[in-house]
Length: 523
Image 1 (cartoon, helix red, strand yellow):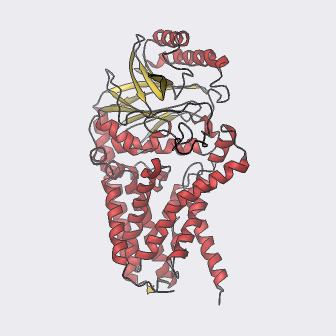
Image 2 (image 1 turned 60 degrees about the horizontal axis):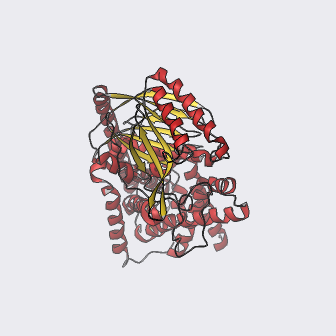
C-alpha cells in the first residue's frame, strides 16, 4: 500500500509532466500533436482527490511547469535590455509564471468541483479552459500569449473555425479530445473516475463526441478554405514589400548611429523596386527619432521615400505638446510616394513596465524595465489608416496577440492588417517564433491578409486562409515581397467577437453553481 507522500509525489509528477508536454506543443519545439494528449496526465492527477485544496495545488504545479518553460525568455530580456541581474529577474519571472498559473489552478478546481461523473468532464473541462483563457486575455491589461489553440497555427484546415469562435474554439476542441482520451484510457485500464466506474458506453460516447467535433471542424475548414480560394482569385491584389533592417538593439537608439540606420533602410528599400510594390513596410521604431519633429533626419527619410516612388509605412516614436508637457506615443506613419504624411497610428495597447509604468502615481518607486523608450500614452483602439488602396489596420508589436484590436480594425474598414514589431529583445529564444505564430490567427479570424515587418525577424506574409506565404530568418538583412488578396467581407468573429468564449464562462459558472450542493466522493 502506497503512503500518502508517495501518492502526492506521483500526482505532482503527472501535473508537472502535463505542463511540460503543453509547452512542447508550442514553438520552438512545435510538437503540436502532443497537445491532443497533454492534459491527460493532469486529469489523472485529479482522479479521486480528497479536496479542492489539493486540486488547486496540482494546478499550480502544472501551470508553473508550463509557463516557466513557455516564457522563460523574459529572464533573458530583462537581463540583456533591462540590465536587471538574474538574482532579480528570475524571481520576477517566477512571480509572473505564478500569476499565470493561477488560471490553471482555477481550471483544476472547476474540474474537481464539477466533474463528479465522467461525461461531465467533456462539457465542463472545455468550457472552463476557454473561460479562463478569456479571463487571462482581459484581466490586468491581459496576456493572451499562446493560448492552447494557438499551437495549431500550422494546421490550415483546423484553424478555419476561428473565423467564428476565435482561437478559443480550437482550444475547446483540444481539451474535449483530451477528455475523451482520458475516458477511453480509464475504461481500458478498468479504473474509475471520482469513485464512479467507466462503462464501455461512456468511453464509446466520449469517442463519438470528440470525433464528431473533429469532423465538424475539419469539414468546415475544407469547405471554408475552398470558398476563400475562389473569392481570393477574383479579388484585387496588393504587392507589399517588407524591409528587415536587422539593426542591433544595442546601437538602435544611439544618436551616432541614427543616420546609418536610416540609410540602411533606404538602401534596402531601393532594392525592393524590382518587386514593384504598392507599399513598403518598415518595422516598429525603424525611424529611431521623433518623426517628423527633427527636420534634418526627417528630410533624409522623405527623400528616401520619394526616391523609391512608392508609399511607405514605418514605425517611429512621436509626441504631441500638451501645455507645458508632452504626450509621447509609439506610432506608425503612412507616407505617400510624394513625401506627404497621410496618417499616423498610435499604439493602443502598451507593454506594462516596458512602455509605461502601471499605477505610477501610487507606486512611484516602480520603474520601466526597458530604459531606451519613453513613458508612452495609449492611442485609440481600432484606428484605421486611410489609404487610396484600402484601409490599413496597424498592430504594433505585441498588439498582434490581442484579437479584439485587429477585430475592431477590420470592423472599422481595414482591408489589410500590418504588424510592425521589434523582436530583437528576445534574441534567438522561442519568443520570436511564438509571437509570429499568433499573427496567423489575426488573419484567419478577420479574413484579412497580414503583413509582418520585424526589425530582426521573423517578418513574413499570411493570407486570409492562414497560409504562411513567406518568412525571413532571424538576424539577417532581408527584403521580401508578396502579392496579397484584398478581402472586405466581415467574418462572424469580426461581427460578434468573443461570444463563444463568453458562453463558456456562463456554462462554467452554471456548472459550478449546480455542483455546490453535490457531495464529492472520496477515492
